[in-house]
Image 1 (cartoon, helix red, strand yellow):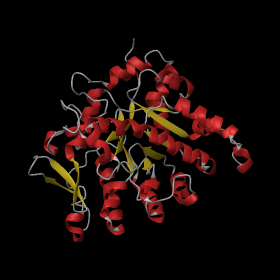
Image 2 (spheres, helix red, strand yellow):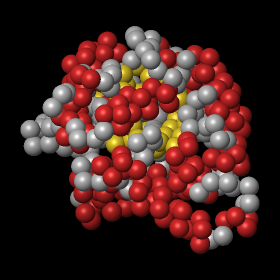
Image 3 (tube, helix red, strand yellow):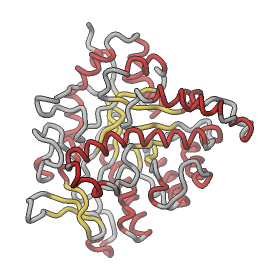
Length: 389
């Protein structure tokens, strides 16, 4: 059987940068002092930890566990101990060459998967300055090879006018998508179904940039409540699994809330959430849509939820085995391949018991699919979505 990675210019639509320690200290005004995100070595554990707003947040090694022979909460100690490709652009390109991947779409860590972590800073001016600093860093990092490193900008979602301005600014810098908080209601803002967000959708649509909803972008505040009862590893696994399904709420909000109808040229991506569940959810959406008589309240809605999905929403997969074939058969134009490098659940070389190579996985789950479908999933869909090649 011919090797699929040799036949296609594979685009990995979800990877992460483990931000270097000076991302914010070198770009944000010195007047903010230690409130600016920075790293410190914890004297007790010896681990390098991110601090934000005067409080410790995230150990550096937790975002770059690829190749680490262990499981969270164990992780590499410092930036020097993580794979160079996690934080260095040239090393990332070398890693892509090694794995046979043409390009990767890039997401953050420190600011959160929807920028919610910046709210810990408290001051609106500082929060916005940190978002802008990250976006400037991201564009600079991606400039090592803009055809292969694909930047998705962060968004100061708590301030809609500022978000619109930042989308317009970053569109001019060459970003390829907009990262949006998937559960803004967790932070006291309206849910995605609200027309409150229409200026953001309009700005992204005008700029031709898709909106990304990355899992884990809501509030993980329930982590500490039960960890003592079930154990930290069980808790981490529970939260990770639940995060996949949280993205169902994003899709429900933008479809039932009429966002897809009002912005028909705007694309959305459900990032790192898997795709097998889409079959049930979209069927359930259509069932409830018809049963609920949606057309009585919204006669302008001219498509079923599954049809809105087919027109402008994408899902990403990277580990699924049992449900992936039917999902690909049903939605070949809407599915995208990812690896989540270098995260704890990434498709990266890790401990022998769980090591998965992207090339081998793709061969196993896509090897018997129609050639046209394989081309779409590994390259064509992403290339069209992000304006690549």
